[in-house]
Length: 374
Image (cartoon, rainbow, N blue to C red; front, side, top):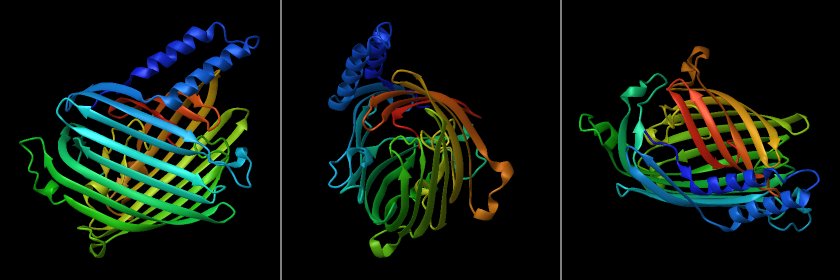
């Protein structure tokens, strides 16, 4: 199984914090400020290397870059401008595999235009656990494939916090095959091919900060339509609903909650079925452990300060998948829970580096990434 990616720069950052901890106090604010500025500049200007090891790939080396910023407002003050972000990374493995990834999320023109762009090009194996809500963890096998993803979207503010937009998705899976000689991959091969579709988006952005909210809510509803008339080799539809709510009942203690569901119909290829498990939805469960045409999930998180620019969080999540909506059942939920640390890397946008240790029925998982899971 894939092991923890070790960010080389993390050790340097933590060492810096520990070295300064004896001198950071209310009577020596300048030292704290200087250290925080140093950390913010390091993350802002320097690409960040990482390395790791996985049994299926051997050694892994790569580099990532994340930046969050605010566009200058025309009529709104800087405090009211929602932050934008760009994340990119690339890594290579000992077995000549690779992954290139880029995602931009920009809020322009006094929060009136929200444009997003996602690009991925990869040749990297992943474990396939089967389709359904009750698969066996030990029956997983490696699947190799190439994937090219291109997905732009744009939404316009039409009234107060309401946005309406459109998106296009080009998602091509090539050369899907099992790496296990004992597995008949004829079913896998039927899932190779191009998925091309358009979608509509309706959202309401009412958070105080879209990167790391302390109060407010977020609502996003989308409907995607994939059809051969757009060059797609698969005809299917997907409806997705994402609702998040944030409250800070006690100073600096935030309770965050999320309800997320995806409902599908038609000929949905397995790699585009909604899943339970991963770094953002249902931490504690292996990535894409459960997949099917329909998915529902809820998660809750308590966020709190620890010391200076270090924050903590505890969380729990419940989720399940099903071939039909009528097959959802109260006794079919899977669970995950855990706790983590957050290192503030940009005070202006509230960006953090996230470390999560999660637990589920199949053991523990460690996740490292930028910003909160939701």
